[in-house]
Length: 171
Image (cartoon, rainbow, N blue to C red; front, top):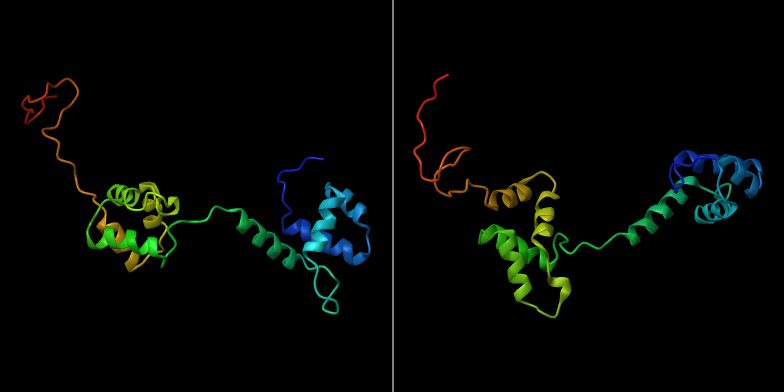
């Protein structure tokens, strides 16, 4: 009885639907799928449809209920498009051309008692690159500082700092 995942997939839900319609007991369905009878009972309760609209269980309703419950488990995003914090970050990035690190430092200094208003610079980068293609993403990416760094002469392996770079190499 080897199981790959812990969650029921569409094929397992379809099998539960077919077997339940045939009148197979929950324990027998559990044996067929290699699952616990409690899992089958919960899935049948999760996918229950109102009386008079069908067989009593709908695999799509079970999948939707499962997806809704999984959404509640996820971590809430701090930078939600259209929110006050998102507008603050966007305004600093696009209008003032600040770096994400500058925005994060400003947010840390502003409301010291509100941990929800603190945003890491990596969260800001995730906000920028999570945008769908279009004008908004283009404006945000354009606002990032992506130029070449100028830190003096190039240094290579075997060269001393400040040494002249040879103009041509002989083979």
